[in-house]
Amino acid sequence: MNLKTKGRPYNITEPIVGRVSRDLDASANDLIYIVKKGIKFTNAENNAVFLSTQPLEHIDEPAKGVYNIVSLDHLQDGDIVVINTDGIVNTLYRVKSRHNFLVFTERCNSNCLMCSQPPKDRNDIPYLFSLYKKLIPLIPKNCPELCLTGGEPTLLGERFFELLSLLKRELPDTDLHCLTNGRVFAWKSFTARLETLNMEKIMFGIPLYSDFYQIHDYIVQSKDAFNQTMSGLYHLAEAGQRIELRIVLHKQSVPRLTRLAKYIYKNLPFVEQVVFMGLEHQGYTPFNIEKLWMDPHEYIYALSDAVLFLADNGINVSIYNLQLCLLPDILWKFTKKSISDWKNIYLDVCKNCSQKENCAGLFASAIHKHSDFLKAI
Image 1 (cartoon, rainbow, N blue to C red):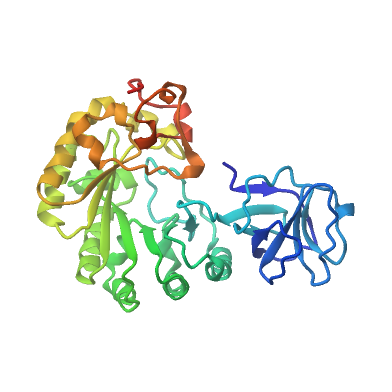
Image 2 (cartoon, one colour; image 1 turned 180 degrees about the vertical axis):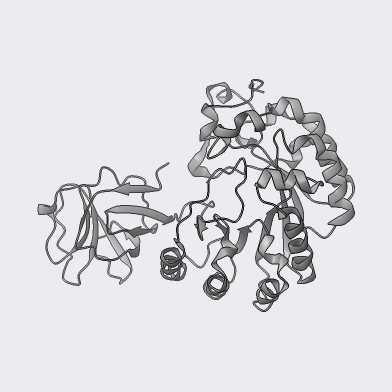
């Protein structure tokens, strides 16, 4: 699924954020009009913005927008996009999806072996902050959920809290899921600043890959990360924040999985849920495949022990990104259809599976690497 497209910009001097509409008779300051093929765009008296697959001669001045776009079929009316000065059109929000997300920054203070979106060392914070200040008021008020991710979102500092405040004001009924490594919350002043916002609709998804600090630090490639994350978890709990623990399953994390489950039960009983996650063959993973890859078939017993131990002791558990055919029936009730719709696929072997509608399916990148034990049920 496309989340961006490109054409030739016309009169675009700064990024423009707006809602997509194919109704040329509609009138709103925040609309960006998609011009259908064969129709001339004449709605330009208010300096309207257009997107078009057609050449420039089909556009009346003084309009501004992007022309000669290959395709706009991926956009629905009501979707929110940003038009950049180079003619790239990024989709920021899709009205028919439950998998919308805001990337606060691509910078990160960790460098995880299996990061699916490797960090970039560039200061993108001012641009993205400005972008989201325009976007958030346009998001429909009935938006059910929104993921806040990165990079590491907390690296925005004070701007992180400004965006959270804006989200609380504009989308008070939306569930927010913030994916963070939790390390910045080791500084109590940062957590205290969060506490002042009094946000009840946000959950922090934080990775903990081992009960042994050296293994966790090695996986995230950052010294003292385990201690910072643990301090952050306790500070968040003290501040009454909702916490989800995330454990990606691979060769480095699996050997101590049962020990980790027991460590969580003993030391972190306040977490709202624990999620065990299949590996995504994306980003750094292909480059570290020898250090990471285990066929899920090889770790099912370890996963079963960890999941059932936590569940039997009253902790909510979920399994993400793993296929039902690889799991014993007793674990099926813990699985979720977790993979974002824009990168979710099913392989040919899945076509005649009786459980396809209930299965998470695979990441699109799984065409390059997946379990040898996939089968139709």
